[in-house]
Amino acid sequence: MSSSPGSVDTRSLLQDSDLTKAQELVYELVVRQVMTTPVVSVQPDQTMHELGEKLRAAGIAGAPVVEQGELIGIVSMNDLINALERGSRDDPVRQWMTIDILTVREDDSVIEAVKAFASRPVGRIPVVSAQGSLVGIVTGGDITRGLVRALDLDHRSDEVSHYRASHIFQDISSHDTSLTLRYTVSPRDFSHSGEASAKVKRALQRLGGRPEAVRRVAVACYEAEMNLVIHTDAGGEVLVEVRPDRVSITTTDAGPGISDIESALEAGFSTAPDWIRDLGFGAGMGLENIRRCSDEFSLRSEVGSGTKLVAVVYLGQGNRLGRAPRS
Amino acid sequence: MTLREVVRVVGAEVLTEDVDLDREVACAFGADLMSDVLALSRPGALLLTGLMQPQVVRTADMADMAAILLVRGKRPQRDTVALAQDIGMPLLWAKETMFTVAGRLYSAGLNGVELTR
Image (cartoon, rainbow over all chains, first blue to last red):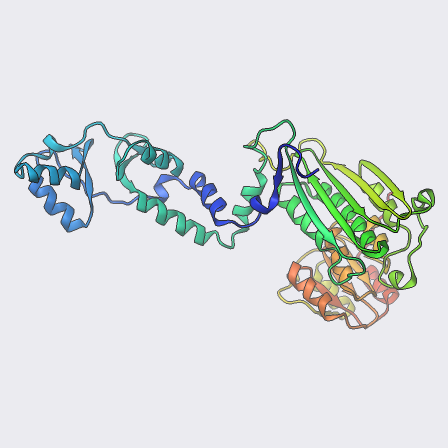
């Protein structure tokens, strides 16, 4: 089921991989947040020699050329070297500058700057305001530093992971995209029982599920998980498939199986031993609770081979998991 | 009713750290049967229980409850407190029995969960 086309492996997407986070941040950060300002600029009538002095003093490798407040070109260390080689140290900057310049807007996403750098072998790109005036300059190093700073700042920030998860389905296109969460449950392991369901709950919250729907999934999942802990010989598996409009919980185990499903589904019917009842479970309410919480429910079992339970919860109108609400 | 008032009314101890005592509990539900809690409680309710295992915390978490008040003076297992601390579920502790604790809270104005079915 998990290998169906379009299914997303959460191990690579939901865990805090810094690469994924950096990719996300490239879109989230705007150029203003990473650019260098104020800008060291030169005037077109200054000489290449003066340019060299300026670059050396500022410790930079290029500068935009500004005439009467207007950005008219860009000139780099390379241009300077070429000029010096030709013995043209007294030429005006105007003669050596590049006129066909790339710019980015200060409110552009950093990805625009990254794309611009990829399109041409330039070392720096002037940043302009919405009105077109020069407000800063951005280099590859600025972007790297900006990302590292943002990664650091967001290290513990749930907001970013929430942001990432809440949009997870948005840019993935398929006929049926789903996210598969798979948990192995050990029998009689009461110290860890409920962990899978707790993780499912957190995941759905991050995906933007409404509390009421998340609670129904959590309760159904918890009861199903407890059934694996309490009743199975060898434990089992909880598989949760998340789609934008619904969540399917499937638990499977290899036995012992239920001999009388009809009775098992009756509220109050239980085969649990007393020690389970002492833990607050095993009162024959579990399956009834799961059925009550879910919109679709099925239970198949064969003595000796195992049990498969499927419960589906629909999110309801207006709530889509992994898709940010239109603002 | 705020957790601060709950603590005052039943003379409770607060077992977890960094609890926001101004947090409101909408109503209360008392049970030792976790499946009943899962089936019948309401989000934001206070759970009164005499069970001391970590499953109590899991149950309250899954059911979106606001806090847990352990009754009958039994001390919870260490992993119960650790789990509550870990997920940020306030854990309170009272000496008296469930009936007495519930009675005090009810008299002080805290209502029970209303069953809709």
